[in-house]
Amino acid sequence: MSDIYIVPIELEDHSYLETLEKFIFNTFHLKTIRREIKINLQDTFDQNRVQYNSSLILRQLITSPPPDAEKILGVLDVDLFIPILTFVFGEAQLKGIGAVVSTQRLHNRFYGLPENREVTTDRLLKEAVHELGHTFGLVHCLQPKCVMNSSTYVENIDQKSAELCPLCQKSIKIEKSRSANKGFQFPWWGKKQ
Image 1 (cartoon, helix red, strand yellow):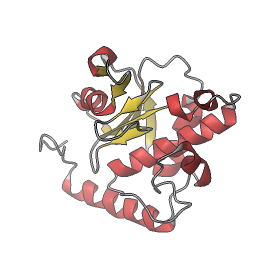
Image 2: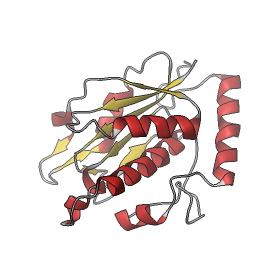
Image 3: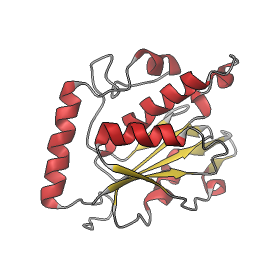
């Protein structure tokens, strides 16, 4: 049986994870397992930007995946970037195994507003499903309310739902059926699981 691993990475507040695990299970219909995997965040820190390179974190996360891992989602609370963007909420391998999401810019306090736990949780659920959706082969959706719609700013996250639109749901079912028939391939290594 394949599972989705939820990996807290130097995360101080684990209280969001139980809700996240349940929501991911209900969305993707795969069992979730919480597991610690050692990630060296210092190796991903860019002193000039004072941010963490999400691609380098993702690379560490997927280096030695558990044998029963269908997907791995790293959850952390640092400011992420990729070289071509000022910041990202998360990153994923398209049709790959790994994704990361950060709560740093999902908190109201980041924007100088009063903290709202419910809003932060909602944003985390949306971004986690969005990034995992990419690992299942979904690209950005043009439907404004679909969770796979692109989110450049936190306001974009707030305006969409946490659900996949019917077309994205159908696409995931097709992709899951293909990978079950062919065996999953690691895009970077070409090894079958």
